[in-house]
Structure formats: structure tokens, C-alpha cells
Amino acid sequence: MLEPASLEPVDYLVIGHIALDVSPTGRQLGGTVSYSALTARALGLRVGIVTSAGEDAPLQALEDIQIVNVPSEHSATFENIKTESGRAQILHHQAAPILLDHIPQVWRSTSIIHLAPIARELDVTLALSGKLSASLLGVTPQGWMRKWDENGRVTACAWDAYTSEQILRQAGGVVMSVEDINRDLELVELMAHYTRVLCLTEGELGAVLHWNGDRRRFRPPLMEEVDATGAGDIFAAALFVRLLATHDPWEAARFATNLAAHSVTRSGLDGIPTQQEIESCLMEVLS
Image 1 (cartoon, rainbow, N blue to C red):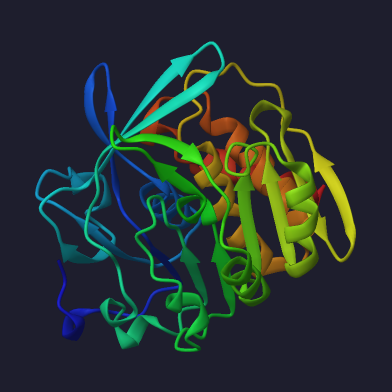
Image 2: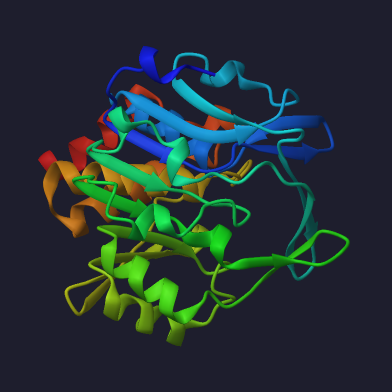
């Protein structure tokens, strides 16, 4: 963990729990924070992370990224189980909550601030306090739209209407998956009404972007899927970065869709975009 006095300014700040993903081959680093931070770094940005993780977290993949870590006995630990009806998810451990006071002053005016809860770890005052002054506040609200039972089995749940509306109004970009909203497309339409830019990811079907009262579907290129873990997180980071750079939501969604499609051809964090993939996805719009 870095001390505030030693921190340098960053271009992309992501806030939320780093996760440990339980797999048949062991535990590996995961979570929106890990995938989005590494994607933003691959896109050439200086990246910072505010998280909470225990000593069990293998942070080697993030060693070149500045991290402020709130100490915790355990890291957030998830197990994903494939079933005939989709993915079943178990939350084995939670890490400590992340509060506004944990965010260093030097990072509160970062160009892109990405709120990335995965297990209700972020206090809603992070978005509503007025203490964060990002050029673009990006939100992936899945962690506010989950609940779990005494056995840790995770299911989708309703996001408090008043709180969600207030956060959506503050956000410059929001990314959710169809699983996050339990495939309730009417809810997406309602949330889009409050949001500047809202994007719904649908796995191999691509993404639907809602902007300025309009919506458009973006189809990904056909890829041979090896592992789709983290694709939505890579999509979100790519969308936020491209959106701020171009101020063109359609172009940002096109770029993010294509870049995320490449990620499914490799497993885990190996799916982070390569420079060649980034350049090829950028070249399409230039041509």
C-alpha cells in the first residue's frame, strides 16, 4: 500500500474491491478493478486503484500500478459455477468497505474516476458528496445490484430507486450487463432516462448504447471464445477512455465492443488488450 505523500497524479482512478476468483486451477486475481485498471494502462493512461484486499491477494499483475489498499482480513472471493441456466456465483468472503476518506486528495480530481463496486463495498456518498471532480465519472453498478444469502449465493436485486437515480444523474457513463439487471429491459429504458450515456452489454451479442434519447446496437467481430471472464470490465474501461478522448459515444461503444471481443480468446488476465489489438480497433474508424 502506498502512503498518500508518495502518490503521483493519475489519469484513470478505479475504486472497488479487487477480487479473488476461485477456479478449478486455483485462485486468481480478478474483479472489475483488476481488469479495468490493466486495460486503462494498456491504453496508455497512468492508473491508480483504491481498494481493500487481504494478504491473500496475488497483486503481482498490478505491480506497476499505484494502489491504496484499505487493510482487510480477507479479499473479496467469488466462485463462478457454470450451469445449464447460466452462471451461478458464490461470494465466499468480503473485504472491508471503501469510504470517501480512503480516497487521497491528489486523486479526487482525476480525469476519469471509475466507481466499480462488486459486493456493495462502496458508500454511495462517493458519487453524491461533490468531493470527486472527474472530467468523466464512470460507473459499473453491478455491486449495488447484487444480494447474497447465508450460503453466499449471489442473485440480482433491485437498486434503491432514489439512490440509483441520483448516481445515474451524476455519471458521465454507465455500463451494465444483462445479468446485472436480471434481463429487465424495461428497467434499462428507465435508467437510460436519467443517464447521459448508458451501455448494456450482452455477451456474444455485443452491446446496446443509449444516448440522447436514441439507442444503437454494436455487434462484436466473431471470435473463438476461450474465457469471457473480465470482458465486460475491459469493455467498460475502453468505453470510458474512448468517450473522454472523442466525446463520441457511438465511436466509444464501437471501439469498446471490438476490443472486448478480442479478450475472450484468452483466459483470465491474459485477455487484457495487446497493443496490436488496440491499434487495429482504432484503425477501423480512421479508415
